[in-house]
Length: 215
Image (cartoon, rainbow, N blue to C red; front, side, top):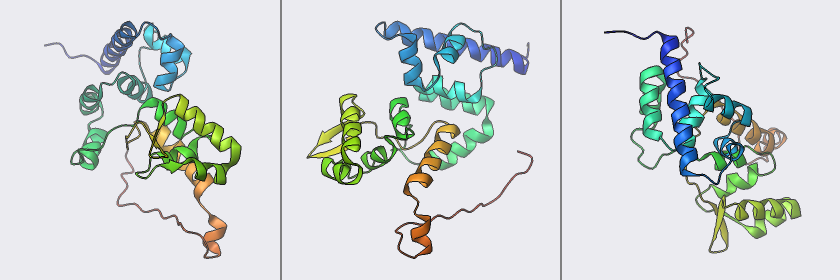
């Protein structure tokens, strides 16, 4: 039996990603490569290089975006188990018993981490959604225009005079997206002065249970 080297395995995976891109494009002939790249949350140049096998050793972030963008969540889990067993085990411990948990789609993520739409999207992904009146009062006409854009693009929908995110995920597929979400949330929603004055309605805490310095 022949055992592949790590480099050979990664190059084999690059072909898997290329084939996924081909299949996705074949099923959506009206979408350009740049449109698909945007939906997947990656640059057109990176997408093209993956499609043409110019990238022989795809990064973890690229792998996640292709699997997630093409909707192959099961394939992603199997990939994690094979190449990143520690991460797969952690995901399993956190999410395996939550049947309602699923990844946010790339379009939803793109808007959640967009500085202009971030706070509106945080309200829209809540269980109670958000009203147009609240957006007008809190964010003015600029906020209303952003809300209208999200509605016209199908990112949010209107029900009983409240706007809700169409994509009801609750897991971010990459650490880069999670980091950006945390950064924007702290910048826009954390009232440090209010906390010091004891007038704020939120607070921040950080704790660790254990750290493996070798990892």
